[in-house]
Each structure stands twice: as structure tokens, then as C-alpha cells.
Image (cartoon, rainbow, N blue to C red):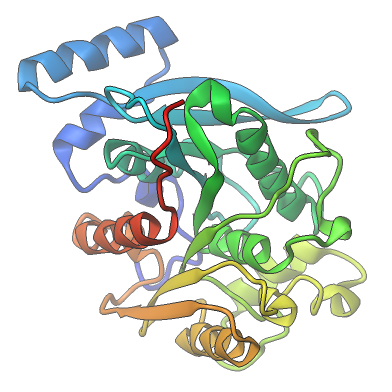
Length: 319
């Protein structure tokens, strides 16, 4: 479980799921996809509830020989109309983690009727800023390009992230149309714009030095690399906010020991000054990665599901 002293939630935190049934349904054990699907179906029959369908290891971006993958979580009993899509981006200080970290978030969204993709992205150990931002944008382009195949409404795609992932989805929200952040991972003629973003416990101004610990500064330095100071503004979502920025919901602990709550306050204020919609909801949790705690997951999921339902409206047209 995440603690106040933990710099960014690790696998133990991100692997937690609020409900035992959901955890069992969304297990990503190391077995064949057919076996996994059969086990989930058997459990669903026993419990009398449907199971989310999981498509594992889908390649969404390619950089030469480097391939990035995602796991796609589909709603049970796929409806006849296209559903909103959501890209789920895990944390890990931009330094570690994989697509399984946010599988429980994607699975929760699938059970609520969304098509969700929990993505892998290049860590700072592999490639410095803006590589991870480009990967997240490539994931959006992939989902939009394959919308018909997976029953996604291409005009209703959002993103959710926690910690370092919150920073990346905030960049997604604020840098629409900026070619320098697109990268060349694939589907270049498809838009990477999103219609809604949820950021949990994010850092929005990486130039910030007041009240942040050495873990935050070290993570930011590792993410950006050199030249460090020259790229701080470009890597800060707050500096890119404009009137056309995507609607943003921020969930943030007032007692966050790593990403100061004031950063979220400033981000909301900048959004409002620019005339873009943003909402900040304080979470009464004594930790950074509250979204990975069974105690706070029910409230957190209620917030982000409600926001996506409101902002990502489903078209009433048949696929």
C-alpha cells in the first residue's frame, strides 16, 4: 500500500483493487489469453455477472524495432452503439512500471461501459522528455484509428493518469495540435486530441521548487535529462494551458507529500483564466497514491467515472 513516504506508487500499490470480485475478474496472470478468458467467463457464470474482456499485448506504436503495447479492456456484453474510449496511464516517477500497473483502473472503466486501454510507455531510462508524452499521444491516435474495430466512438476519447501518469495526461490535455509533442510512433494522419482528462496527484509545473522533496526533484531531473533548466517550462502542462485545452478533472490529496496540492490549485486557476473547463476535487487522504488504496478507490472511481460519463457523451448511432 502507498504511504506518505513513498515517492511514487509502485506495483504493490497499483496492483490493489477495491473489490475482490473485480480483482479476480481482471487478473492478468501469466497464462494464455484463451485460458484467461475462459477462467473469467467461468467465474462470471458462477457469480451471475458479466466479465470484462481483455485483449492483451496490442502493439500501438513503433519506433524502429521498438514496439509499445497496451492491454485493451472491453465492456462485457458489448453494446450495439459505439462506446467512449479512455487511455489509462500509470505512474512510476517516469522511471518504472508497465501496462499492468493501471489494469485495475482500465478494468473498472470497462465494467462501467467504457473501452479502456492501459498502456506501456517509454520510461526516462530509455528515452527522455518528450518521449513519454509522444507515446501517450500515439496511444490516442491508435485508439481513434482502430475505433470501428473495437467499438469506440472516435469523437469521445479521454485519458486518466496518476502521479507521473497524471502529468502525462495533463500534457495530453494542454498540447493539442503541437507538432513537437506528436512523435512518429504511427497513425500520423489521425488526431491525438482528447475530449476529457482525469489527473490524480499530478505535478503540473515542473519548475516548482517550494515544498517539494528530493524525490520529486530527482524524478523530474531524470525525466527531462539535459539541458534540464531549458526544458522545464516545455515539460510543464501549466505553461501550455489555453482556451482549447481539454476539460480537466483533478483529484488531489491536500496532504500529498510529493506533488504539492497548490500545484493543482494553480492549474485550476490557470485553466479558468484561459477560459477552459477544469475542476479540482480535494481527496481527504494522508498519502500521494490514494487511488491505489482500497480505502479511497471507491470514492476515486465514482469521481472519474462520473466525470467521463458527463464529458464523453455516447452517440446514439448504431455501429
